[in-house]
Image (tube, rainbow, N blue to C red; front, side, top):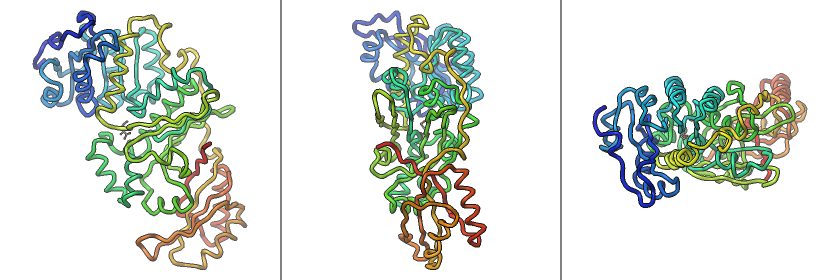
Length: 455
Ligand code: HSE
């Protein structure tokens, strides 16, 4: 311990007993941890009034303890060994915002084993090990709260688990990664290259410590798997989720999509089919008139279609320090209120009690049916433009819409872009293989799915 006392953070809050404070131990004092400390301190009075008791950050551990001391202030005891924190008898709830999976899992499981509630913003941890963690929490009678793990400032977990609890959820489609949405917006609005936009997102603190997680679509996949589990009461085998990132997109693709009336967004999608779940993350064309097409910058948007409520749209900041802290502290307030009541009086971790969670297979991406966008590079060859429609027709690809698009800056680059009729990815691949064989190697330079959402 480097300074302070466990109880030195106490301050009287009018009408609330100082003896019953919820004592918080924080693992990680980076972007989210420091924001959590700031929100807890700045709004201490109203948090205590609304939660029914004060919530005090009493102990923390971080990779850089000196920096942690600066951001958390002198009243928080700092410990070098996170195991000391998760086992400490004076801690009621552990906030895990360190990220990563291996050490985070050890610490969360140890905290649960020691009867601590856990608040985490760690989507990778829960998407990959949620079943084990929630089972352990249920067995020990503690809460694992994770509102900060998905679309930070949007209370989507509360919405699915409580606000929409009476509904059968039909589909959840969302932009759930702020970094990639920021990059795509910069490419579309400012014509920035992928690399420049990513550098800017990293400077602004949106990206993960390892930005590959954002760019590869993996971060969005973790969040989408959590949403699918909440929406459908299903264990989502994460390794079966189809994930494709945005690294191969460039500003010209945005221009081409726009020529057809669409924007390209990295979508996380979850739908329940008859005998499988559709859970996938990849760039897709979204109609310009759909609300999701207007989620710009680092904002997130989640479209939920439910049988009684109908469509609802949830919008808010998708990344950031205090934006994530908003969710983390709200979870702490839930723990303050519900931590001492019996399990049956609490909202189940994953919408339904663990014993009712079902195992569902994930539909292979090749079987998913949708319209598709194809881009053929013409390279200034008008002969291709005249033969492409016939060649596609002869290969069995039905074209519903098309446009000839000239690159805004490169006179030598133009493209013919089309939207096909609905067909599965596997069927389209067969037809494009036929096209390649029969038309001297002709093939699209890009193929993306079109998500014609119920407007
Ligand atoms: N890197 C994440 C994002 C942070 O950009 O969405 C919030 O989970």
